[in-house]
View 1 (cartoon, helix red, strand yellow):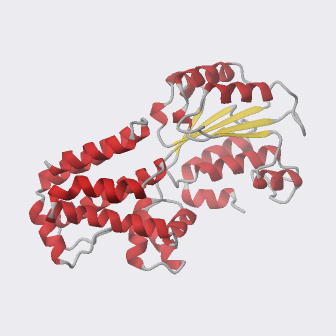
View 2 (cartoon, one colour; view 1 turned 180 degrees about the horizontal axis):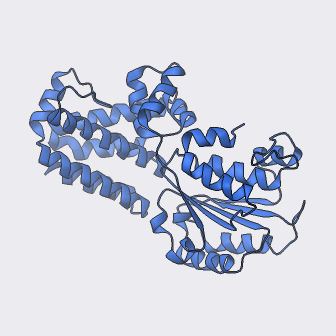
View 3 (cartoon, rainbow, N blue to C red; view 1 turned 180 degrees about the vertical axis):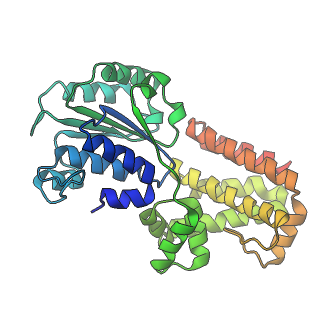
Length: 329
């Protein structure tokens, strides 16, 4: 079970901030944990929730063995409510239902905790409804909001939360952890560039879908070099059928970003290692000849824009069609 000591190794500032508030008896009524995927937001939320409900806590650490801790681990604690997007967003009905739950007394005590996953996906109406909830906090209610994009959340909500910034895990630390788990160093390079979460990285390492995604992205980049006129067809025949879910589409763009970064890095410094594309390969030479540094910088910006459009719920097929044609020019 994860402890604050383990969190401190990954997120020393965030951990110290929360532990200090616990030790001083000043746990905030609302936290906003913002950081990239894999930076430990969920672990911190669960650990804080366990502390608040634990029957046998030791300092800031919950015991992990009492009935409350076990029910939180299994997702069955009646006074811990976890809100996640319904489809692509968190809707006003979900916030209404949450508020209704909080009108009742706690099942075990008067303490209640709610965690909002991907809080940046709150609709405008849901965010405004939540704001009213935050404006009149109960002393025994704690809100924990998790997001990769804190600046997309209403400033009025942000101002009512203690904001905890989570820093990316250094890639070399992540890389070594994966190698310690038996992952080849080249594969570890790629996985540590995609996520800060060891469990997620190991899961991707064993995932056939991910192996297929990697292959498709490499083929797409080769297509731009060798047969750019066939890219649009490749997108429809290979990319769209494979990258179906929103998270998969984001992963595809992350891989595409790394591939073009590899080419750019070879332009800038030939002895640098690559992450996705094979370095010692005639294909890399052709790719460098096909794209100038200026073109590559422009392409990277296009991919980042496409990632933002997916976040904004633009139709995925349209996003990829536009991106494919923009890179082709």
